[in-house]
Image (cartoon, rainbow over all chains, first blue to last red; front, side, top):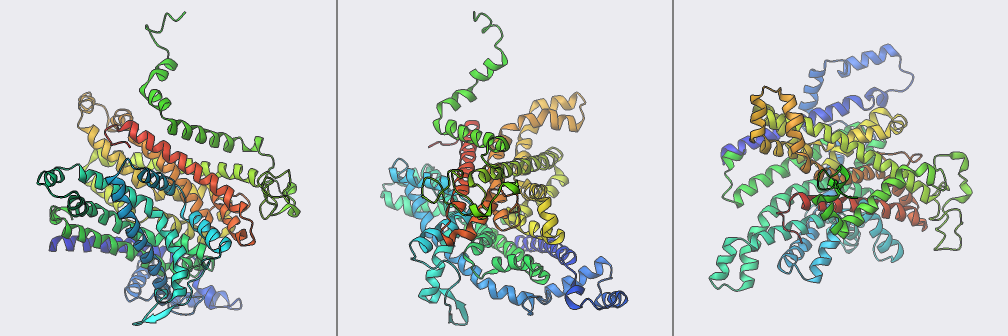
Length: 324
Length: 314
């Protein structure tokens, strides 16, 4: 276990170093920090002097080292537009993004497991066929289109739900979130469903095929032979083993959802990190872009590592030491 | 009349009698999907000749025609514009045809690039094994652990920032092919590596080794043709994914410019006008995009079942 953990950590560090290299390349190539600081009137000689003072003429390795040391301390520079530390700006918005991802995850878990299990138990039923057909079509609809359609139908035509923004937020134990107000929840419904719609078909299919596989396995037949009631076999024996692969795939996909929030946030003007990122690109706000790349990279690396660890803990047949 | 059938069937007859065509002609979903896909391809690539208007010809566009609803659904419609017009007065039907051409071109070229990278990397990893294998596959693992969409968005954003929007939109097709191609090669590399590993153990590979053939010849002439069926299966799914990625990037304003819209950028244009009630600018390109992706996915499903009959089919 310990060696596995260590190996994973080393790997995660290497990945983060690669990401930091990418982020540094962004910082190096996008925009000119001098232009942001000085006006037109500064002479070329003075510019050069400033460049040397700021260390912009240093060799690549020295600059990268400085960038790394600052990054580890959480210093990515000051955002040009917000005039605050870039990391602070990102972390402020991260709550909104995570809120969205969390709500979407709840929807996915709440819908995919019952639907998938139902389709596996009653494969010939008309409802199962309908669910499978819808999920086939659902996989082919891009998330931004789902988002636009949801918004058009429920907020423009029917006027039931607000079209954009995050609504009112309330503070609860120092956590500023829309979960605690009715208005916030109303704003959350459409974006969360739109975001969930990408993963939902995939999860229903996954749960269904895993469950079908489990139902035809030896131990299920044995449980029937023992005379256990059908429900007990389904929900206690088979379902437990179905959820294992769902957990690993699911964990990785939830990391992926952070990426898809960019699209959902753009449609619903959700004030999260994805929206901020798109804005920053338009304004060439390099420190924010850099910080975003690093933060999102970190989220991916952390979720992947945790999922791997969890999988090893839950499924004792996986030999962690060999797998690392 | 038909005396030579038994002796030596012509190539056409061989194809006609193959299992592939037999099963294909018995599967209605596959036939229909293929028909729709073929229609899309033909319409897209003959757009300049069959489209009622030329959306790229600025002189033929009249801003007075903008945001006209479709003919069938409203009296305000204009007979010249069957599906209505967009915010600049371009005919939606024609822009969809041209947009589909852009989307399909990018999708197919990007998959071509993925295929090239995937084949070279997957073959090398599978054939040589050892350090090369673990190094290449680690890279693929790491890249796969990030969502391809994320990689594509960040890379295109960076390119656009570094090149400037004007320059970027000039080379948009090329850039999108590069970005989507590079973002998704690991899928191919993995699949090809897996089938190479299975093929490598077979006797014909040993035989060609004994004959003294060079590694590249064995790899590309002997092993590769035997790995074609999984490649074909994932290629269809990858084309659908590439079209979807392109649409997403264009929707975010990181893809095709408004002057040369793809299906994604059309939806993006329409989205800005959806609050004023002009839903048709978004909905029609959306329907076309979804049907295009859907039929490609259905064809991919069918191919997978065909090559892998052991898989439970419902």
